[in-house]
Image (cartoon, rainbow, N blue to C red; front, side):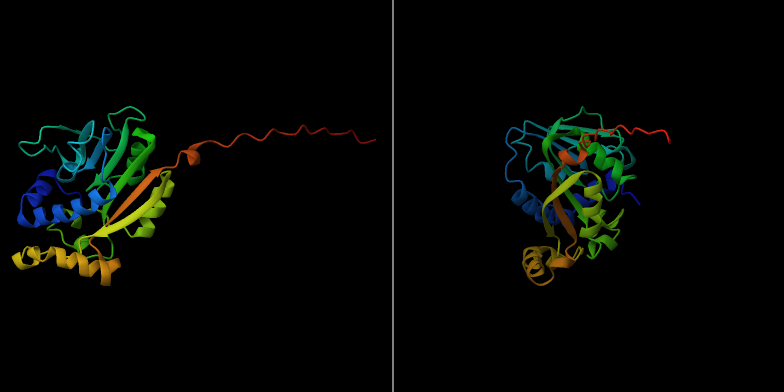
Length: 236
């Protein structure tokens, strides 16, 4: 089931959503510390995370898939946002340096088509950063959070999907070991949960983060092998 954009916005407006966004922004900024002068596209519900790079990027656009409904940047964060069909992005080929997918891939009506469109609008040296709920984690099964909607992925499933979409994985990370709880003591202890979980339960994180690059050579057709001329001799 796809989460409505307004429901996702309400989550990030809560105390639990604020802590969740802070934890994930820490990991995202470690993976992409600088996007100076680059074009960045966020697909899904990426506004809480695009703010990391909004002041660095030459252009920063948030695109919400049509099935999620329209979404707006929070007041005071002037930037660009739009809604469109996920398998028909309204951008030309080779437009963006980077794409971040948050609350996007797991809620896609057709994940393969979404990845093909992302591949198309990325530049040849472009990078894709995907945040998805971990099939083995607690967050994937709590519908009170956006991560409990849609299709969770294991690392193997996501790897095969990316390979089929002509992407090559560069590195992986994980986050959200804290329980998906609204209890204040749990929220205040989020840094402790992250440290202990990373050390003791690496496979039980709530979400996985995967950075991939366009595999341009995989999309190039092989050079045709010249056919040999076959001469048939008449039987004597």
